[in-house]
Amino acid sequence: MKLIGFKRNDFTTREGVTITGYNLYLTYPATGPEAQGMVAEPIYMTDAKLAKCGLDAGKFKVGSEVTVQYNRFGKPDAILFQS
Image (cartoon, rainbow, N blue to C red):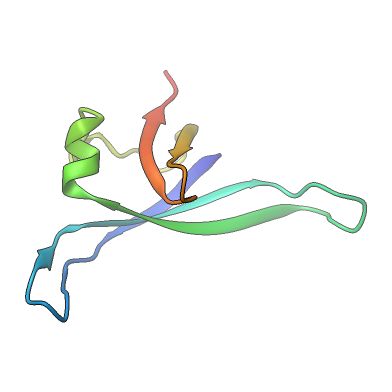
């Protein structure tokens, strides 16, 4: 996957809890018999999840290759930047 952009997105839940993090915009090659080109996908990573990965926004580099790890519920849980 390639990081093509990111944007700060903080919000407050209905319960009054403030969630802080980033929308990350990724692309990857489309697969399957009826697919062509690239697929674009947004994911949301909280500051807490990014800190667990040893990351902050200062380390985001547009154009970087990344690997996203998902939890058992299919939600993004970690992001690893390729060197």
